[in-house]
Amino acid sequence: MHPFLQQLLQGQAVEWKTLGEVANLNRGRVMSKTYLADNIGEYPVYSSQTANNGEIGKINTFDFEGEFITWTTDGANAGTVFYRNEKFSITNVCGLITLKYDYLTYKFLFYWLSIQAKKHVYSGMGNPKLMSNQMEKIQIPIPPLSVQSQIVQILDTFTELTEQLTAELSMRQKQYHYYRDLLLSEHELAKVGFEWKRLGEVAKIKHGKDWKKLAIGDIPVYGSGGIMGYVDTFSYDKPSVLIPRKGSITNLFYVETPFWNVDTIYYTQIDTSQILPKFLYYFIKTIDLMQLDTGSGRPSLTQAILNKIQIPIPPLSIQSQIVQILDTFDALTQSISDGLPKEIQLRQKQYEYYRELLLGFPMI
View 1 (tube, one colour):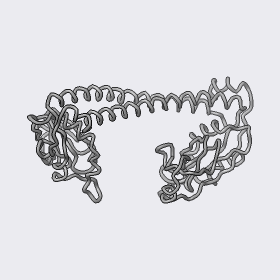
View 2 (cartoon, rainbow, N blue to C red):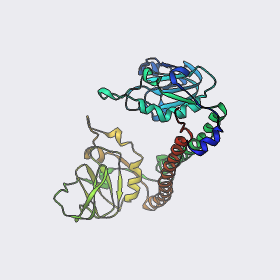
View 3 (cartoon, rainbow, N blue to C red):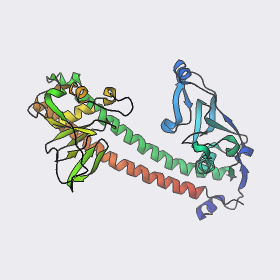
View 4 (cartoon, rainbow, N blue to C red):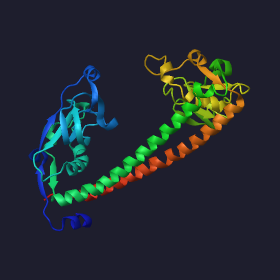
């Protein structure tokens, strides 16, 4: 046992019980997409996913109110636990833990299970599961309530800091997208004057070529996923917007230096007497290219579809001003986007370290 944990306990005993001894374990009910759509409201419904805190929708009624712990029973995220303190409902692939006694707190149990639950997942037949009959066997340490409270307070501090950093990153990205879309909106551009032209009128969309027989060099090779390697020759050496043809079709690239592109991504020969390459890049970024998808399976874009995209063309001087503003926003957002994820990762590791330390009770 770590000295810090010994100091918290001050010689007080830690009792062990199974989860089944201290809590009731239940599951939710089946809710179809139709049911969710027909009963939209304010109360969250939680299921087996982990994105969006496990929420799959909101309905106008609730099955549970107050403190609980839920866990994912089936699928790739089986064994993921969540602390709840609200009005909510759960589906049949979500488990619910209700404590029987007041000598154990929900938040302390949540932190303990966030370490232990995944260890009990059964992955037989290719479908991971953590059902109630396995969950109830997990051993739970029960230190005095005062110790539980101190441990929870420390771990809450770490989780709150991580959540604040994550929220900051999300806010900065949304802020950038808002101003980019505003500056390039028809309403704002109308103030300075512009005309609509099709993409095919201001740029030629060109196919990529195979690169496997080219010699290794220092010129980047682009595919729909980004840089794939480096070769000794280029397919184009002027500023260009690269638009994926297949696969990750929303993954645009702006390139100013010589490059080679393969057949999964187009490059553009841009008429710079009409439009600045960087302005074109920023504008296409405002378009939902998935709406132009022509693929029945793998997403894809055709030259014919892309050529028809309507592009606003303000005077070049105005384009230049917009590009400067967006470059500034982009640099700031990129700086934050580079720094914050690293800080979030550091704080997460710090949290996990102290969680393991504070919950390192030796089983007697």
